Amino acid sequence: MLVGDDSEDNASTKVIDAIKADGGVTLCYQRNRPPLGQAGNINGLFERASGARIVLLHDDDLLLPDAITRLSDCWSNRPALTAAFGKQYIISGTGEVSQSDSEYLNNFFFRTADKAGPQDSALESALLQQFPNDGFMIRSDIAKRVRLRDRAEVGDAVDFDFGIRVALEGEGFYFVDKYTCKYRYTPGSIHPTAATVEYMFPIIERLEVPKTAERARTLALKRMAPFYVKYLALRRKRSEALRVLFSEHFDRHLRHSAKGLILLGQIVFPGLDPILQKIRPRAR
Image 1 (cartoon, rainbow, N blue to C red):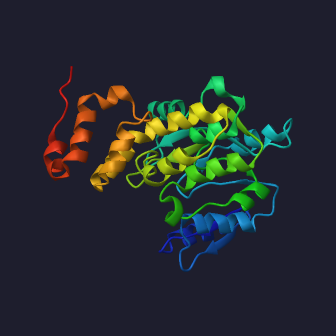
Image 2 (cartoon, rainbow, N blue to C red):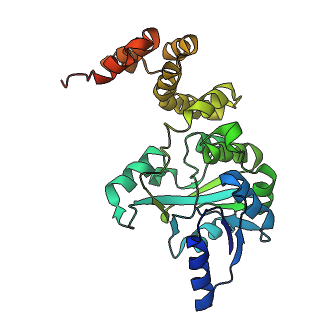
């Protein structure tokens, strides 16, 4: 097991020392000084990996006991497979599973029973973020070749961007309709949409995709459009905000709703934003 530590204190080192003392687990631990950042840390782990496949796991998440076997079995009949992944539980900072939040997360990202098995389009899977941020198993050669891009290029969307580029490079994804990973949700967790739009909306809007993935690209843009318009409005990028607001990627029903009118007001009259923020559409 390879561990890359970007933390600024000794907490991780103490945990590693305790695990080593118990025996039974071989750990190759590297403390990064100075810190490398998410992309640099993970790319370093990719380079150091020597096996045919890699499982990536962030520091606050957990694999279920049978996850490695379930994911590895996906290659039995599909040796050219690029990556495999399952469903994620949402857990609190103290480890409690939220079944309702877990079901919502997996439904939102199309990790459902009807999608089980090899995916018809890896690119569609990545655009819809069915391919998760971690807990997946991936061919080492592809991970080493694609690598994560850093914050200067993709902001907080390093995982989202990586999934798309892996799909473009590889030969297929496989979804296991079983829980394989626990994703720990904390106050510092990155919102899967709000924190990615600045970079990913333009990237996906420019992306040339085959017809099989066009529906997924459109849906991805529609999901991000309200967040992106808000982002542009707050930075007073009026013309670009208006272009996206009145584009096919912004849901027309939302555009004509009270929320849509507030967004329009924030674009056209940015000085009134503090007042508009206080307005709440009346419940029907």
